[in-house]
View 1 (cartoon, rainbow over the protein chains, first blue to last red):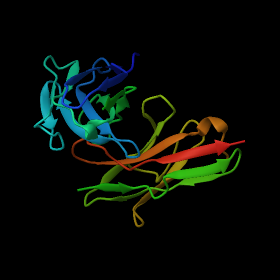
View 2: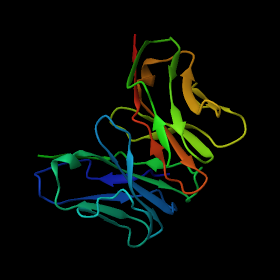
View 3: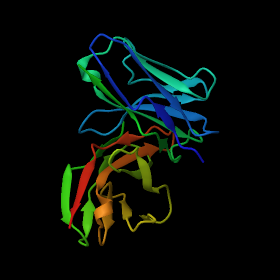
View 4: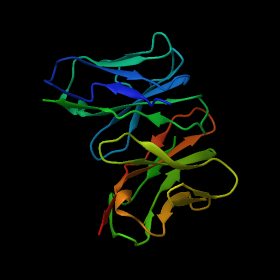
Length: 115
Length: 113
């Protein structure tokens, strides 16, 4: 079974530029998550999708971050414009369902450096 | 709201020694508890989880964790570590509602020969 795929693996941009990350979840997984992991901290949930609907985006900085999962499969996360404090690893994860006991499967992450 | 505290940011240990990584949580509702491991240059992967039933849960590679409701803890232990156990370990909590995970800051386990 293929795991969660993410691209690109690394990205370096200057502040005020825009950037987009792509995620392909495990086949058949209805729930998809984007996390931000700043160096020295645990992952923090940015947004959670159930199929193509948003379940939780309470911690997404909506003035600069956006995400979509139009067909209920792949997802993209965009930052526009980027700030220095957005430097982090962006993790995508998926699970079969929405319940609290579900195991989340993580991709390798995209490491973003904003200069 | 729920939170997770991992008091130790780094735990250095010699190979074949025992280790305990501490995790305490705070939640006003029933919880599910998880330990995830992140090996260098890899994504997080589930190590073990507590959902219900026996408070002692085990992983396939010799780790175990015990859910202690009165102390709101879920410490991770291994009686004898290997070099290959060097990784960052994250404790996480969710509740019986949505599957949103709240993570601790992580503990880096450094195993040396």
